[in-house]
Length: 152
Image (cartoon, rainbow, N blue to C red; front, side):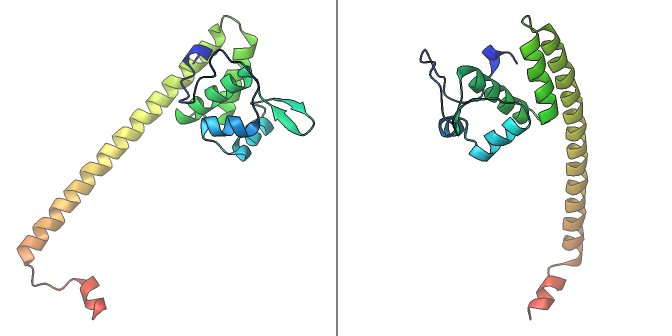
């Protein structure tokens, strides 16, 4: 997750590196103003101010893209904040990459466990469905179902 890999799905700013308002940034990323302000409250973003207006630079946009990517990958805001802090502190991004790799491996393990749980649940539900279908075939369609009795 380097600045080159932000992959946010948001439009590129291109050569024009002008500042943006909160509304422009929110529209670009499909976020609400409230969400962006929340990220500020959490210390993830720190835009400049012109009176009451927030001024977002290209750097703020890059940080927001990293935040959005981290959220999509299932990282907590605390983990994302740690990642961004390392990003700011290490020009070579060695510690940042180690941190991201450790966290990514943890997410992979958690998702693999969840996948196994979902697969087991699906197997059990399919077995239950088969058992119910077999029971209904054996007892015949003339049996009244409790839900049908309540409609009368």
